[in-house]
Length: 258
Image (cartoon, rainbow, N blue to C red):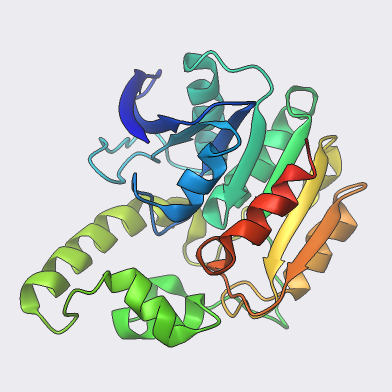
């Protein structure tokens, strides 16, 4: 994956590009994205992937003009336009899935294929979504992965989590990224998407890990009910980070969209 820059109305956007095949536009979750991301590279094995960093993530500039859900949605469409893409396969995970769903709802005639991987955006009082903003680093693996031990190893990449230097860098990066994500996820990840999902015309596949403890599978059925014709692919022994725990299964589910 090559890291590039494209200019949009509000801010220069850093994005990863790689692979060959049909165009795919990928929106990442609140945890961010790197060039080494296994899921990103798996997508690039079958598609020409464009994966923008949300402003404030990685080495990208922050964008104070992007303040609410509509701003995030229109900004993402600005990126699509700036890249010269026409009806790419639209894929989003978690927070990125929330934005992708909004994009497809706001411009239903411009999205023909949509893959939502454990998207945020809905709220059920009987199944509240845990607060990422108050979750401590050591609590994250159990929340995000089916196999917490393996998940912790993926998140730390072999680094010593007790090392003050690691913790400081982690907390600074996390605060910067979640500061941007919080504009649509805090205090709860709900901005009225439920009232707009009916507008989506795209052929849609929903992908969910059966062990998702962050956005439990009950939300999968809510999305499926709200989006006409949506297909649900449930993946066993996978949590919210199903894209890392069961990468091949997620790519296969997306491939059903053509």
